Structures are given as structure tokens and as C-alpha cells.
Image (cartoon, rainbow, N blue to C red; front, top):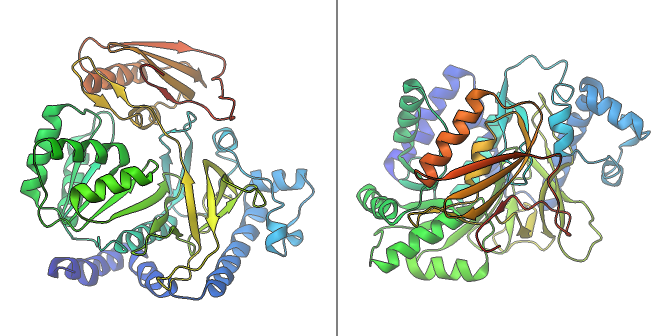
Length: 445
């Protein structure tokens, strides 16, 4: 740990927390201890937190009160884990349709609006509390720390910054935030050879100890470096996010950079859900804050994950169908942590899209953009040619001029001048035979 990182964690953050009445530091200290608890003690802690959350949901959240009454379940009926699994799951459609009814009638703190990128084709808009934000932040930093990536250590992000116009105040605030944390964030939505050349130039000058990125962006960044004999001296680890990490890609990245890769799993609804430790035998769930189940635990093979946020009392997510599939792993980890593990994750794979000049655009671009266009409830993007995109949308309301302009300007900005975007309003988006929606369809698919 660098001296700056020690000062940030031990001095600056506690001062900030004390002045602003925040709980990040307290949760971070707790999580450092609790990860070494036996699995049974962690499970007991989850049950205690879950009982408090359920009491709140049954008494103070109108939608849950009605939803559970409809199937004949009262709070007194939930006495065991098996009883809990009888509660009907929460869907994305329910969150979007009943957002206000899912908010607590007794919660008096600030509710922070947020939204998913809609990588399932259905953006989800919701609220979190400041208390929940601090739990999430502490859990995320602990997960990153398993790779050695601590706050204040130089970290290069190949990421997707906010889409659309930002005020000067927002830009300056973001710059200060990343400067204090010693982070360099590069947007990877426009992927040309010139972009990768500049990314490597900036990265080498920044001298990162850690590299964090969207999986597909990491792959292209590394391939460009290999083609041109570029290296990042001093790099200690790579952290992969947002897309599945397959064994062949893991080997390629680790061989190319000669550092270990740490897989992470999260979402906008919950932030950090799970991550690999130094043993790399599955992903440890941030179980003190998040409860992960599989929808069909008796199924031999992957099953859809159900996720419960144990501390978002403003708008509780209980047994939420997140849309990803995988398998839980009951074997203890040689690292000694008692945290439960996810063995495999089969997340959504989005096709790569292309521009006329040869640039590549990650499929995550459209989910990131369309989460800010609230009139769109479902979507699918198909690339017909290098200069033609068709966006099929199910609208909750007619699109405003502002939304249409944001959509047009960002597509041209990322794909290049001359790109045609056709927006088609449709009554529904077809599902594949697997029951899943194809969100981005690239050329030749």
C-alpha cells in the first residue's frame, strides 16, 4: 500500500465521513473483519439483516404488502430460509411499473435516482438510499482490494463515462473526484486505431498499477498493444467487469500482460455483487450486503440469479430477477474467507457494432445511452450495414425533442458522421427460443 493510499483511507476519508455524516469507513472496517467469519456466522448475519428488511417491506412498502397478500403470505409465515424462497420474485417490469409503490412510506432520508444500462433490453429505473450507497461503496472497495487495488493506487479505467452533455460543474467535480483517487478514466465507446494509440500513450504516461475495464475493451486494448509492442511497466493486476470472462480470454490477457486477472460481477441495481479473491476459485459474494440465490436451486446447471439488497430501505429489492444466469459453489475457498461463492456466471453477451471508418463500438453503448431516455421501456439495436442502424423501441410515452436529439447526437458522435439511425416503434421485442432478448445484433448475425 502506498503512503498516499494510507493517508486517503486513514485520514481523508474518515474526516469526510465525519463532516458529512456518512458510514463508508465504518462499513469498510466491519467488512474487513466479517469476511473471515465462518460461513455459518455470515449466514446468521444475513438472516438477521433479512428479517429486519422483510419486516420493513411488509409494513412500509405498499407494493410488497399487496404482492405478498395476493399469494397469501404474511410476515409471520417467513420463519425459515425455505419460507423466504416461497416469496414471489420481483421483475424488472414490476420495478418500472410500480416504482413509487415500491418506495417506503416511512423512509425519511434522501432517495437517489439511478437506472440500469438496460443490457437485457429493458432499462430499469429505481432509487437507492445514501446508507445503501455507503454499504455498496465499502463492499466494492473490499472486492477490489482482493486484487491489491486499493483506493489511491494508480488505476487506469477503460470504461463508459456518462453519455450526453455535462455541465462545467459536473465535469470539474468528476475530475476532482478521480484526481483525488488517482484514477484515469478513458471512454471506450469510440474504438479506432487512433483512439487505442492515444489510450496507450495516456496509459503509459499515467503509469498505472492496476487496469480495470469492460471485458471487450480490455481485449481490444491489449491486442493493440501486442501489435505495436507496447507495455505498461509496473502493472500488478487486471480487473474485468461488465461482460463474461471466458477461460481463453483470461489466458490471453494474463499471458500478454504477465499479471493476474480478477473477474468481478456487479450491476447498477446493486453495484458490486461478487469478485474473485487471490485464489481464483469462484467469485465471493459481498454477502453482508447482498443475498444471491438461484431461481431453481435443484436444477443441474445454470439457473437465473435472484438478488436481494439487504440495506436499501428506501426502495427494497427482494428476490429480484437480475437477468443473469449461473451456478453457486458451496465448496469452501482455500483463502479462508467464509463468504459464499458464485462458481460460474453466464451474463449477457452483446454483439460488437462497427463504424464506417473501421472503429468498433461495444454493445454496451446503447444500454448506457438509452437508460437516460425515459420514454423507452424496451429496445433492440440491429446493424444493417456499416452506415445504417435500426433501433426498435417499445415506448412508454412519445419521445421528446430533447430525447431524440440526445439519441441522434450521441450515435453520430460515437459511430461517425454519415451514420443513419432509423428508429422504429414496435409493440414488443421478440425473444429468442431461450426466452432471452437479443439486445444488439451486429453485422453478419
